Length: 75
Image 1 (tube, rainbow, N blue to C red):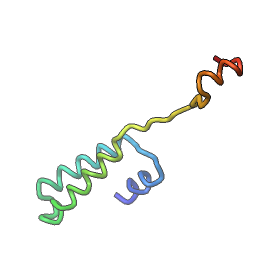
Image 2: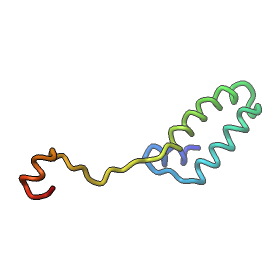
Image 3: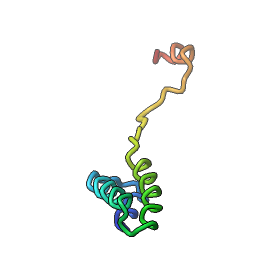
């Protein structure tokens, strides 16, 4: 868990980590570690949702209005 959390904090997401975390959350929901485990399962599920979100990378953005592009010869 510590290694996975360190990877997630540094922005690295591995498929195997998400699979393991989902399996652990299911085990906690089924009662592994009793009531404390059930409470932690909800927190773990929130972490999984955040880590599973896709990352969108914008490579470039054209900030010039259309009129300025024509004047600059780029439009």
